[in-house]
Image 1 (tube, rainbow, N blue to C red):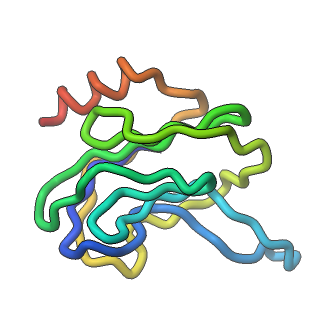
Image 2: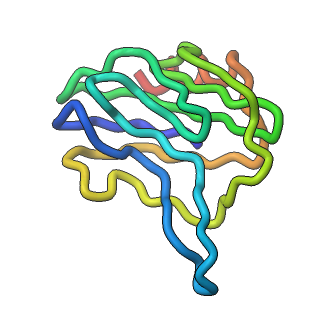
Amino acid sequence: VGVWFRTDTGDGRVFGKQGLTAFGKSYRTVSVSVGGGRLRAGPGGLSGGKITPGTWHHAVLSATPTRLALYLDGQLIDEGPGAPNLATDALDFLADHPGALSTISIYNRELTAAEVSRWFASGK
């Protein structure tokens, strides 16, 4: 999942979703948030970079069963082991978070560092 976003605060969710299915089973999707002026991602507790309120940023979280990779403004800022049991049926973007979104892309494959870098450079 990749998104261009601008936040008006140093804390809040950019995308993700937690809750219950219609059958009462809990689920959790991949998520990216801003906390303390840093980008954070789950699962896996990935974090890093610096988010400046009022500035456009490009965030990408690439998640496979074997690897998670978090990118900010075209640069890999953290990575960790994969997440084999993620639900991917729903995401909320900037829910209850003051800010703005631009291009949102959802892929069905892992993005390479070169692809993320090119995407960031093309959107500057």
